Length: 157
Image (cartoon, rainbow, N blue to C red; front, side):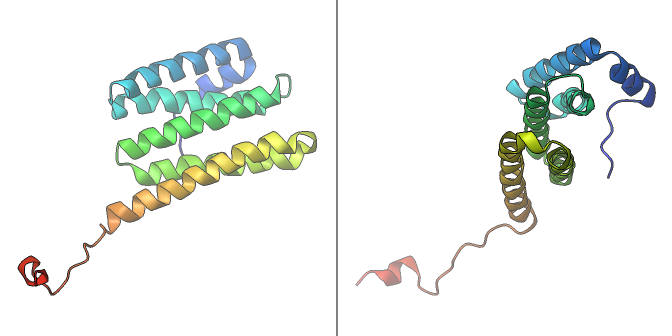
């Protein structure tokens, strides 16, 4: 599945206009958080998805502070992923995490001077992936109650 929230023309416009991209990221994050605060997961997803893609655009730009861009990208991914999980869209949550891990690993390979903070964000993503996979296991295969052949009355002596 390819996650895509921005149309091609809008993406190109944001790549050219970084101040507008920052504004779009902020509005998308704030609006998505508003809906999350009200547990309106499906309403939050498009706003957070737009913020996530915009954060990736900002991370791709070499003229801005990469440490802040990396943090913005990683944090937005975690927010979007947890929103997908709350909406019981586990596969989408996992996709967001994998997209983020792949992008951060790419950043790690080209940005050798900042490996510590990139690794910090990668660790957060892997932890979220672990939680997502556990959530998926519980949804697919509910935990079985341990049953005993003994009846409660039979436990009394």
